[in-house]
Image (tube, rainbow, N blue to C red; front, side):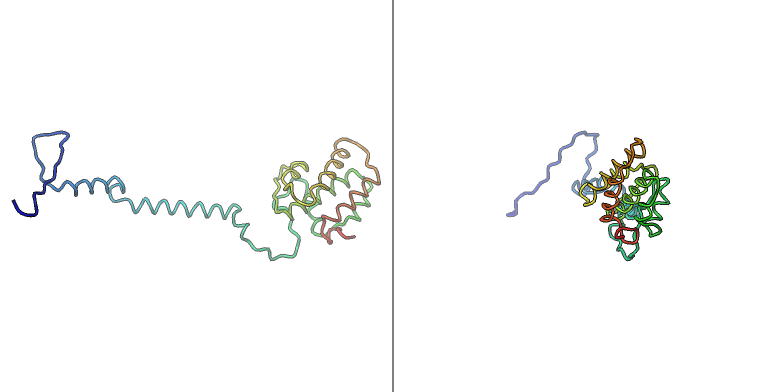
Length: 197
C-alpha cells in the first residue's frame, strides 16, 4: 500500500443483467444530463425560437398602440379622436375649425345644438386626453372612456345630462341653461373651434 492511500469508487447497480460495464460513470451521467437539458443538441434552436417569439411580441405591442407612447407630437393642428363614432363626422369637421360656438348658439333647434355641442366637447376631450372612441359608441359610452381626473369632466357630465334630457327625454331647453353650457364650452374648445369667441 502506498502513502497516497487507496482510492476506490463505489457504484450501486439497480438492475444486474450479467454484464459489468467498466466505462466512466461520471462521463455517462454528464452526457445524460446534457441530453435532457438541451434535447439532442437542439438547445441552440430552442433558445433562438424563444428570442424570435419575444421579438415578435414586442413588435406587435409597438404596432398595436405601445409605440404611440414614444411618438413625438410635431403637429400644432388639433387632433381628432383616432376613431369616430358613427354619425359624428360633421362634428369632427367642426373641431378642425369649420364651425364655432357662435354658430351652435345660433341654431334654432336647441336640442340638436346641445347634442352637437356635446359631441364637439367629447371629441376635444378625447384629443386632449389621448382617448380613443369606438365606432359604435354613444355619447354616454364615449364619456365613460374619458379619464375621471381630467379637468373638464365635471362640465362634460352636466352637458351630457342636459343633452340626454333634451334629445332623448324631450325636455325643453331653457335659454339661460343653454347659454351657460355654451359659456362652459369655452374652457374646453380650442380657439379655432370657437372656444374664445
